Length: 117
Image (tube, rainbow, N blue to C red; front, side, top):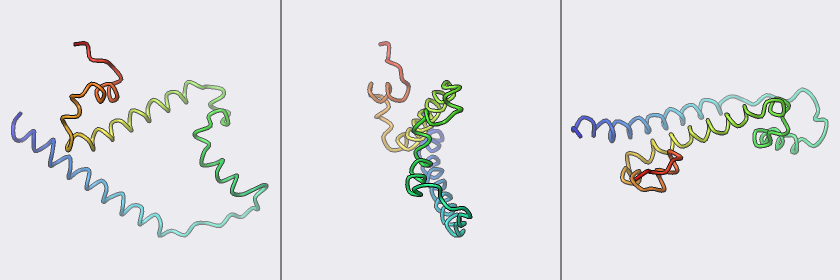
C-alpha cells in the first residue's frame, strides 16, 4: 500500500473522528444553553411514568399503532440501525486495531457471513 493511502487510512481518519467529536461537544453545549419550556397542561397521570413510557416507546414496538399495522418497517429500522452502529464502530476500530478485522469472529460480526475458505 502506498504511503498516501496509509496516511488517509490512519491520520486523516483519526483527525476526522476527533473533529466530529469536537463538533458534537460544541453542539451539545449550544443546545443546553436553551431553557427548557414549561408544560402548559397538567399531567393526566404519573408524570414520571409518562416520561419513561415516552423514552422507551421505541423499544416497545407493540405500543405503536403504525408498527402493529406494518411490522416490516420496524424490522427495517432495527436492521438499519444495527448496520449504522457496526459502521461507526468499525470506523473507530480500524485506525487502531486494523489486524482485528482479520479474525473470524470479527469478520462474522461485521459482515454477518462466514468465510468460505
